[in-house]
Length: 390
Image (cartoon, rainbow, N blue to C red):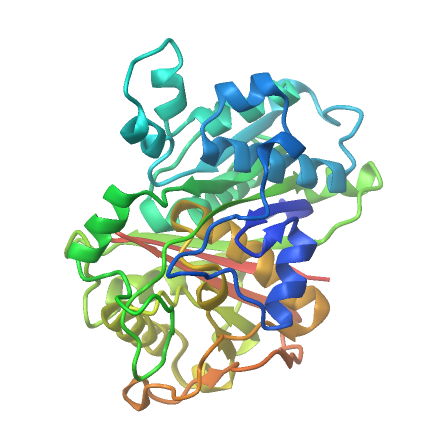
């Protein structure tokens, strides 16, 4: 790859609070956003951030995206407008369900019914807000959608099709119908706790939120004097072709995505110094994911600090990959891995893993400060990012 992709801004709305800094500080301190068996963004009040018009014309998931994007754009130094021609800037915001929850709650139709429910409405709102005239899109790879968005955005920059992209994911699906569907599928924790990689794990906890990153051609970012937070070094993706909700036990398709991401980054398994696992806390996912990591990373795996932040944020679905990319970059930047909360008794059947039950210092690998963020979605969507901090 001849074009480096820089991250110049990040923003987040999560159950741990509003703002990327709040997300990271609470994660490292062992905070949790899970309460009463779900993880809602209780600190978020749209009235504090958005006009009445924006609140009316955007579903909750898109409101999250607007606020996260505003933070990312400010950090990137885009306060005075786009630093590149509008046609050279894109917007890619993934979501699994989009504004579906608003439709489930609706009793009558209005001119805004369809615009509110469209999964692409967050990307459309951001393009209007910032005057972005390049392609806007909305990957919908379920729990992998946010990572898909970042991977697709990075690819567009590398190919010279865009100079900058707003990329991320957003979700707000904590409604009874969705909750009951996950419960009937056996994916939701009946005890209301998320315990990835634990011997007694019994499912995930539903969450909501958004994560948005500003990606730029690194040369362009340097030329305008932007602070570079890190780089998207590699992306790998594939499909299970197995089952709509269950991953294949052998983990082979996800392993292939990991290998593709490392190859794209020009990195070896030994170069990794942190791994943010998908780690949903379901018996099937964690076992399959660990098997995939064993296949892809081999003897390097037991030496790579590994944690799942879903134990603190809940499962953010389409937002998860983007939020976890932000967390991974922060871990690499701060040289500090966030913990997997509540990991008192790791499952011995999952083999030797470098678990992080409490925040721990990281050491650079032979390739510098490289980390891997895993996102595996319902339907068999596997998306993997390799990220780098200075």
